[in-house]
Image (cartoon, rainbow, N blue to C red; front, side, top):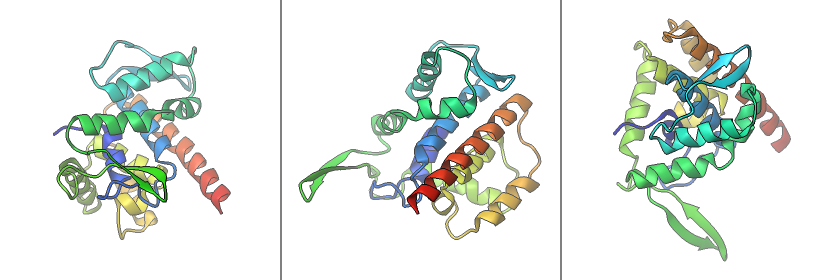
Length: 216
């Protein structure tokens, strides 16, 4: 089953029991970044003098990406990636979860904990979802020295930026992952998409740092 970049990132940010991982506090910004990068890779948006411009506003057929296009259009002007991350993240996690539920990857479980409503999103197969297994295999291969395609490079970059190091790369030090990514040949055929990914990465890291500082 083919899943988009945001769906891959969300699966990494949830435990098999359907609860968010302990390091997923800024997952929503990672999802927003994933949508921006995927739209750019598809030629729907581009970075023009530091601002994101929509070139093809029509429906993509993917509800997650369409949600992103609508959010960008609702901004009312060409905006910087930093500005768009906050607007894109609003409601995005629910859209991604609904997409994975509709496709039979996850299911929704509602219950109460001390009379407080709680919702979990466990896998329909009772363990690790098959798309997540495939994703983790690609990330492990990247660390083992395999050539990285642009998609896997983007996923690894966004996972680190969003603070999902332990979830995406269990048992591996962040510095080791950063060194591996830095040593890779650039897999991006379009320099503009790589530039957008770099700007998104910097913005998410800044947000993640503020989040972690504020929670201490």
